[in-house]
Image (cartoon, rainbow, N blue to C red):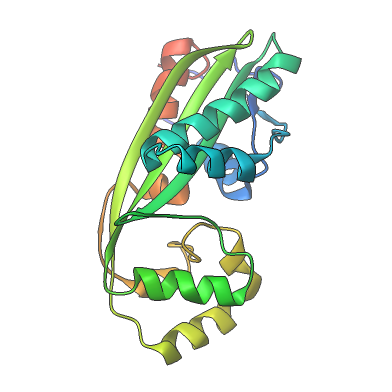
Length: 211
């Protein structure tokens, strides 16, 4: 990494910011961007909360925001003196809000549904301090999946193995999943699951990153 001589390293120390997530992808994005933070996974029943929001007719965008909010709130309550970042992502294709696949069969069903169609990824981030929300952002990307043959889906799922189960949509765009698409509209970080640029803007304004 090249650092410009006129750039002043910000006084940001571990413990000032907490990422309320166990996501290795989000952790890696923040680390690569030079953000110093601790990680405390949120202890919430994410599946039940998401199902409740879907059944009440909440939009996919607002579900992502609500889940990110719940994660940040749960960690902020026990860490009131810290800045806490919660994040979540939802995928919507037509009227269908898609969740992570639990097994190979559900991953195959997801890819068959997305094949030849466009879908949206909504990535949300919420900041909490002293148990209260102080900032939030949601960014959206649209991905156009090319028509996939049954044999390609089978070969793809065999190649990526259990990786199909830890990201919504059963793909990672930064890996073999790039082969599934013929057009992508939106920010790369948003597709990975965090509106990173928005987060960095907030952290600069908050005084945790250099100007």
